[in-house]
Image 1 (tube, helix red, strand yellow):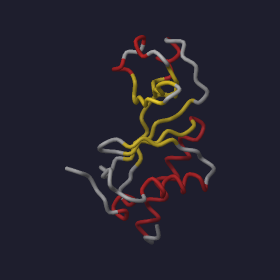
Image 2 (cartoon, helix red, strand yellow):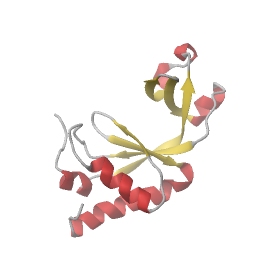
Image 3 (cartoon, rainbow, N blue to C red):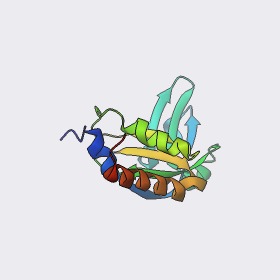
Length: 138
């Protein structure tokens, strides 16, 4: 099952789910002290490995972070080959001055927004989906 590719279907059915907790982005040079079962995501960069982890776990490990985020999952199974979904929801959020950091998983798109913007981001995403039901325009 490769997921939905049709942009209209993706937008109409992109119901955001608020994952409970506070999440942070940290960079580490040595992953040996990190329980890999506790990371949400890891990405290797030249400067170090970026990890996304629950804030409480980062605090326990005394990891530095500068951004506390809310994790929102779009419940539609989007294809990795789908064109335009990220552009639509990031543009809609940007119009409301909400920054987003996106991770595309095999099944779903995951959006990390500043904790202070959590409720508003979900409202904006739901409104965009409902608006698309009325007048497809994306």
